[in-house]
Every structure is written in C-alpha cells, then in structure tokens.
Length: 70
Length: 364
Image 1 (cartoon, helix red, strand yellow):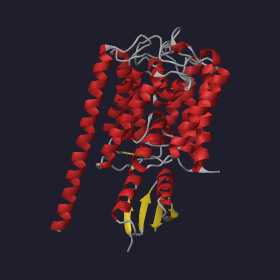
Image 2: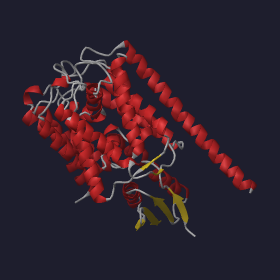
Image 3: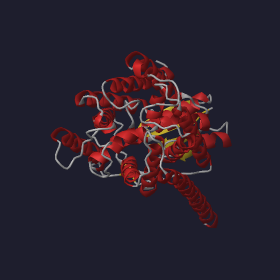
Image 4: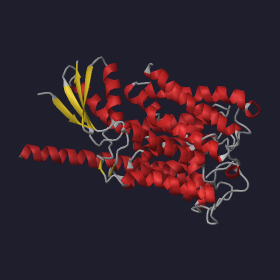
C-alpha cells in the first residue's frame, strides 16, 4: 500500500516540507498526502509537478487527497 | 494564464494601489503598510497615546471585508485554530516591534524601495536573513502543531471586529482618537481607501501572496511562484510612483519620509520581522488575510501585532524619522534572542515527543 502522509491541520509551509522529505527519502515511490486547505493542495501540486511527478487531487468533503506518482 | 504571470498581475494590482493611495493623501511611501496601519488603529482605540499615529485605517477594514467575502464565496473560508496560540501571539508581538524599529512591514518595505528609499534595501537584506534563519528551523522540524476545526462562529469574530472599526470610523465617538498632525492625520478619502483596500484583500486572498513566502520558497524549495507576486508589486508600484508621485520620488538614503538611516537597526529590525514571519507561516499581510478567512490562529497573531504596536509606542520602542531609540534597539535584541529561544524550544519538544512515540511503538 502506498505511503500516506497526514499533513492535515499543518500551517504553511509544513505540508510542502513533509512532502519534500518523503521525496528525498524515497524518490521513486508513490504516496498520498492528506491536507485540509486549498492552499496546501495547490502548493504541493506545484512543488511535485515541478519535480516531474504525476499528481491527482481528490477532494472529499473538506479534505484533499493528493496522489503522487513518479 | 501561467501561474507566474498571474502572480505578477495580482502583485501588480497591490503595488499600483499603494502608489494611488499615496497620491491620494496617505503618508509618504505608506500607500499601504499593514504594521503602521494596525499601529494607527491601536492608537485610535487608545491602546497607545502617540498622538501623531492614531487613525482607523479604512484600508485594513477593506482588506478584511475583501478577503472574508471572497473566501466565503470560493469556499476558502474555514474556521480552524488551536495551533500554539500563545507562541503565535508572542511572535506577532515581536514581529511588530521589529517592524516599528525599521518603520514598516515587509509590504511597506517594498513600497519604500519602489519610491527610491534605499534604506529599504538594507531592510530587505535583514528580512531575507531573518527568513534564512527561520528556514533552518523549519528544516530541523520546527512546527507549531496541528490546528483543528473550531465552531464556525469563531470565524466571524474578525469580520465583526472590522465592522465595529468601520462604525467607529464613521460616527467618530469621543473615545476614539484621531491624529490632527503627523502621519496619522494623513489619509486618502475614506470611501476610496475602503474600496481599494477591499480590492487588495481580494487580490491577496486569491493569490495567497505572502512577502515571507516569496523568499522562503526560494530558499527552501527553489520555487519562485510567490516571488513573482513581489516582483509584480515592486514593478507596478515603481511605475505607478514615477507617473503619479514623481515629485516625491527620491533615490537615496537621506530625507526619506517616515524612515531613518540607521543601517544596523534597519537590518536587525527586519531580521526580527523575517524570522517571526517564517516561524508564523506568513507575514503581517498574510496573517491579516488568513484571520479574515476563519483562521483563528492568525487572528491571535494579529492581536499580537496590535498589542506589540501599543507597547512599541507606550515604551518608546518605535523609531521615528529622527532615528531609533535606545529602548527600541534593546527590544530588537531581546526579541531576536527570545524568538530564537522559543523556536529552539519548539524543536526540542517536537523531537522529544517524536522519539517518545517511537519508543511506545517499539515497546508495543
């Protein structure tokens, strides 16, 4: 199962840092990041897209599930 | 439209409005300044008695209304809080001390630079240094912890505060103080300030522009997205000033309005501001916008800014055109040491709790 990073409730820029740490640790893995604000979802999407990953964001109620794949 | 171009345009709108508000009567190089304007509001409410800086700035009310309304319409309005409120208060407090020793928030720093004030360049160097130090803490695992959902009513307190301020501004009750001379007496017409403030609030909310974020992301993740907002802000304010405020454009260090030339303290004041902004997750404008869209932690931070401004004037910490004060210089040093200690303490407790969690997991 893909790794899940729970960045809900974290203030800017912690969700991006948590994502960056996962990428630095396992550059080829697929993983999910959970966030609860648009801004965090936008920032992470921009960051990983810039790093050459594929991103797919699912919105469930008030939360976002960001699926990141190489 | 590309993200960077969009950011440039949003920043540009804010920069241009800064130039327009200065043309229409706001103090020199202070078309918009979040620190100065909250300080003026603190003075108008009688929280400090510096008679030259007391006014309920309609731009702030406009920014709150604009950010609140657009976030409500777009679904960005979310009521959250509970992430280290007291630490945020203290960081907001010291951020304001640093800003008032320099004489401006990071936004005014850019606007000052866009009208030729090179002291702001020294401030910028200090600001980036403070951000750089803050980023090192972020890399080491600094966090203020998770925020959680709060009752929706909490999100309305800040917009209601703005309505109360607007009522005070319009009916001018005797207990609200208005400067009759000095920067506090210089103001663009109320309606125009309110409307332009609302446009600034909308632009800030939609773009998520943060002066600290611009530099922080370059240092932390080599991303220039937010920096383009700041470039747009600077360029459009510069062009706006050259067209609208050409007589006041003055390239140099000396004779700049509401500014002083003490390089060391311009630098260190803004170092404190940069450090606090990164540790808070956003500069004063970003905090004001977040507070307007339901972030009660940002609301506490803004209260820290207001109380910081009150102390800065009651204790003679704030600088003036004549220069810094001895008290102000001491306060900046205390602020930097204290904030570094708090950030270090946060990291210590975070790593400790992490290793404890691991221990429990291993034992289990």
